[in-house]
Image (cartoon, rainbow, N blue to C red; front, side, top):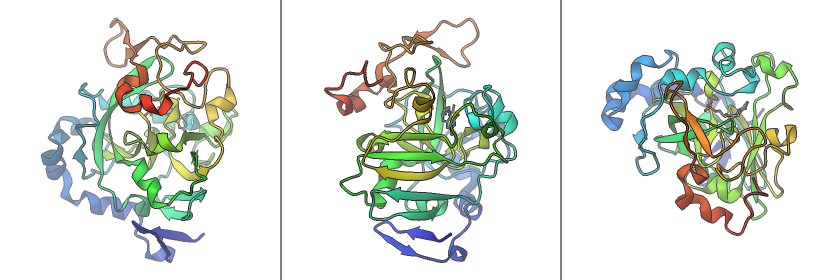
Length: 322
Ligand code: MTE
């Protein structure tokens, strides 16, 4: 497999042996260690003690402008209560069953309607971009939510480096297919591999984030290591994990939950309190960690980002394009 190097303005093929491995790269990034992360963010120490030991510390700056002010959930909630069906359908399954998953080394195939395509090492995808931390609320379609401090890079800036052509109307993403490491993929609960997609203007929106870390450290396997999508104005299922392919397409790409239950899950998946899911009202949400008896809170249109993203859907019937 030829792994290409992607420069900020173009590509040049290089030998795989010339590429720094992802772990070396991440370790290099982490040389500044806790002192710097803490100094830059002011948050490192508060969260540090409860993080799983294996995540490497990341060097990043906090993006306050694109973060919500709510306090983040406990890291234990974030890393032990989530959906990652490749490891099982129970909320605790990803943390219990993802121990054998190997997120390094990692390559991403870039394909379709772009001038620059090929296989790229994770380091080359990340390299010219400064990591930033953004605190986003994850609103699951099952009517619960969490507040999570992700570390990543803007998706749009990455996509632009591949020079999408004018035919690129959508971006499709694919999760790795590794049944030997992902026990859930041995069962036909979804069509594997997991796939998702965005319209190109959604993908280019400044809020769309390619995450490589959480709570200041590299992503745990159960949260989508080493690379995952976050689109905070959409339901959580849109945020595909462990991405191995990014494809620019002219047509709307298929998406896993839409394939599995088209009457329940549309392509857009925008958080919308006025359009109920057939099985869950979307009007309110339960904040994970707020206690069993805490009352649900109202869900906000576009998860609170109406001002930032409503223009993307002007003229669309949001009850039809759910
Ligand atoms: N990505 C893959 N590959 N497989 C999955 O099962 N689940 C989705 C999404 N991304 C899923 C996935 C769903 S349903 C949700 S709610 C979010 O991941 C959960 O993300 P979290 O781990 O950040 O809570």
